[in-house]
Length: 99
Image 1 (tube, rainbow, N blue to C red):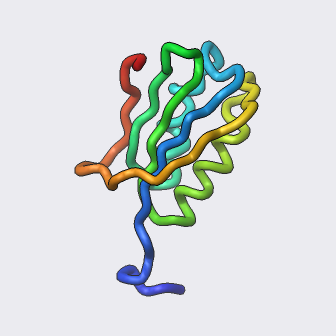
Image 2 (image 1 turned 90 degrees about the vertical axis):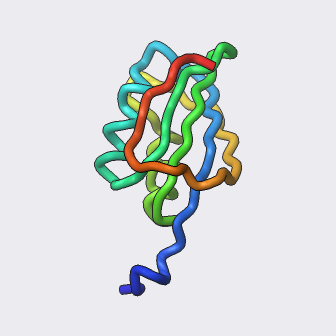
């Protein structure tokens, strides 16, 4: 098992496209990230996509991205655009207002 000092902490921003609004995507994401020990945020976007930031150990963020590709049961994810992000200042996960 790697030493804690060797674990890389990363942050990624995801733009999630498809049928993702009205299917509890923003409500489900915090549960998933908290379960995995991440921090970040999620919000609806005016263009009907969702956006999320996840930060934590690289393997944990990768697991969140895998979940995001499926989403909650009624979601239909068509694609996800992923980009690197700066690490957040704090811990925890929040649902933000529509952007």
